[in-house]
Length: 373
Image (cartoon, rainbow, N blue to C red; front, side, top):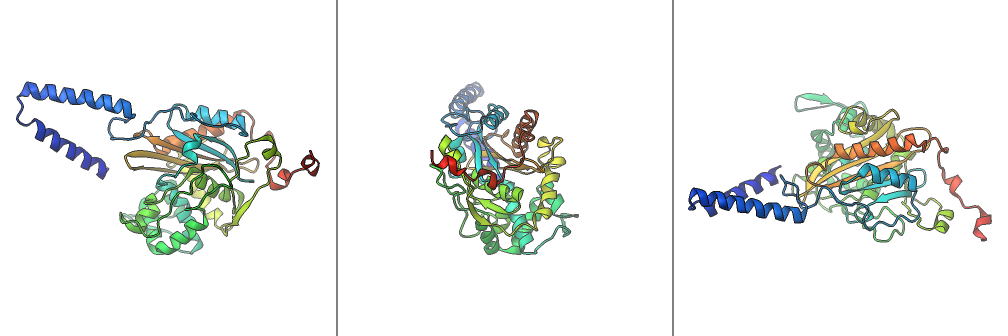
């Protein structure tokens, strides 16, 4: 908002300076000409009025994708739910780490974006690990008391900035790297980038801004999907794998990157993620089957970002769904949550979750008879 205000004031100053000596009619013609030029430039750049946003809100997000090896039922649901929006959808099987579909693979595998409030998932896990808080801890902030469930459901920035300040940057950084930040989430996935985690606290707001808005972090959709998969499966951080040929699918075996010591913490963080969907910032994803998730909304380099990461919190077949939107003001976490919710609904209607039992690594060990073919 501050950046937008600076831009508006600067624009107004120079606009007035350049036209102060013009007669009224000439002023009007000059303003009209500027408006025509601005609209033309914006149309070419895809900038949404009110920004200036440097990424289009609407685009063909499937352009350039290779769908070999993908689960086409999931792919169809993801493409239909994303619709005309400029963004990416990544769907992962948390029991194995297999990427089942990635819409907009250029964006999904790229250098990453500021995680906005989705960083609060890793911050909460770090604070619980360090016993800075537990599920019953209440902070009095801005005239009200709140616990982790409330703060997660409503994405309270003061709560998570306080956690960051109490832990300090070194501990926050240690856990972030344990959870996969700053490294590739995938195993031998061509084109994947490792994102970024800063070596020192951000100049803009220090560790408090890092732990509430993800300042100076570049998170990839794959990194967030891998962390959420560990939450969904009880603590196993898998290498994400993206088999593309029938043989690669036949020979697929889950690969563990590391075992996270979060098994006892999941019951403390999950209620807040469930509450976010039930009545909080992610309510657009709500449906009959329970969903746990976290939204994120912010802007970076004149690009509005909307994140939502989630998993269906059921006993049967689970999926992790991560949505990232880029563009103008419509690109917000609430919209990303609605898109993810639509994916779950479509798959539920297609009986996808009931079609088979939960996928386990044992079911995916190759049959020795197939290896000899």
